[in-house]
Length: 317
Image 1 (cartoon, rainbow, N blue to C red):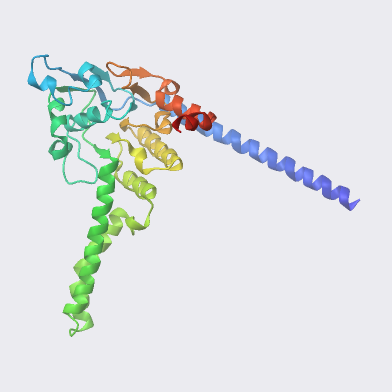
Image 2: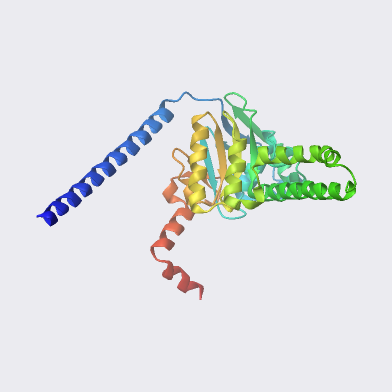
């Protein structure tokens, strides 16, 4: 008898767990539906609507120099950027990053993690020639935001680490220099150094170096996002695992709900799948063309590889 009661109790517990799981799933679906409805009914926010390019004539010297020698750039007359999220996808060298860099220069955006605007970046001298031929169409001019490349983040992370190490070394120097001074005198001398260390921790976290690249990148990105900003991101997935890429998608969607706009150059099928994103392929042999997410070469190849990795790997031997 006791065994039968125990069995019924276990079965009842399983039913309760199943009902609870179903209830949670329905709640998740309701929240997602509500979020989708909010995005659909949200008033259009000030945003970048389009870019137009006045291409050089064939006999102009600039037409024979980079970046106008890139086929997708040379063929591009205009691009609709009015979606909250626009993704640029293509092989390395296809022109997607070049276009994004020129956009950042023309929109006068700062480089995230650097003390300069994109227009002042010496590595973008060639892209300035393209930016000079761009005309941006705005609903209302957006002046918040930034331009971010994965390599800029890595450089920033190194610079913050060096700055922290320098400050900590200065604390040790003060102990040596004031070895014969009173503890109070040493504390006074160390005060400004501790203040600088505290400011670093407040702005960037306790120890950027102790975080993984993905953790630090997401924290870096999240601290700089403000409502109604324009954010141009060049291959942000370089610092992120697939799980962290999903976290970035969540941050992007939250920012979109707050009125921000994104143009993202990416190879990531996960980022290309951002709900509502307009995707342009730079691999079509001419001007960038709008494509569906599952029609991009990146998504097709990834999906086919995951379905049968041996079929691809055997060809590499």
